[in-house]
Image (cartoon, rainbow, N blue to C red; front, side):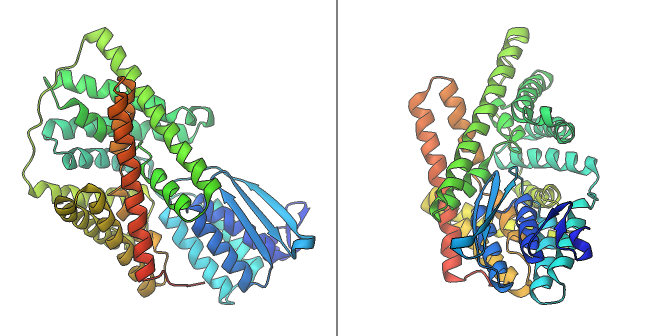
Length: 414
């Protein structure tokens, strides 16, 4: 019998305690929602304590180790997982179900059945909307980088292609492993083709905007957060994962650019003609809506996500002009962290609903990509200097979040 029927079993394998089965399923659900290691371990530890189960947890981006019972007679479980991007909508539903179990409104067996139903629930988001979301993010990134109409159009075209490739990769496991370099290659070819079609564009600017959905800025920031909070194994693994993604992007871009140069020559490059200042605010609102779409947030959260992204952007931009980019990022993350903790306190929902998209506006992905391209061009000193700046900005973001949690701690809702 299935655990949902109350047998305490999963398939044909016996589970000694339905509470244990619920905690294991909860860990997998939180992991696939894209939560960082510290938050998963904290949530599982609190749930186990409230359910009266002695437990210890060790989580990495690719596995969950859970040991239940007294240390002398523990029973250890291993769950293999894969790194997942943030899914705010799923996290919200998992969090609500978890709180119902802890409040006694559902038994662990019923909670386990609820988690199983969430995993099997088909996505309601139309694939075309996701493709359009990627294109809109790329176009908005071009505006943030002071691009003009041609740069926005070229970035949007590349974003459409990358969104389509992403849909195909999600259905083909073998292709998914090559998604990043293939997407970077396609983006390089399309940006170069757009340069010819538009009789010249700001090539480097447009390339950064086209690749913004690929750069692992959020992964790098999460890695810094895990290392800072003492989760060394998970943080190191995620840090090296982000480095490999940057290298894959650099390889794809170099290959695509070289191929275009051999076949058609060097693409024409012109300075961008920036749009009016007010368009930056339009781009900010559009980017916030796009993040809500790509993160699969619930429609009721779009307004909160927009507020968080706007506050983080404004704080980082104004502070950066006075204090420099590193302290500007610190200020932006601090404001986002405070606002997200207030959101969690007043709505009794996960702070990640507003924190993740708010930080996404700030992550230093484009700087990391510049570091890789400089190294590929044999500009070692410039590449290392830019890489260090990327890490410094990521640490500034983490410091801002930690300071916000110190001043206004996250609510203990469990």
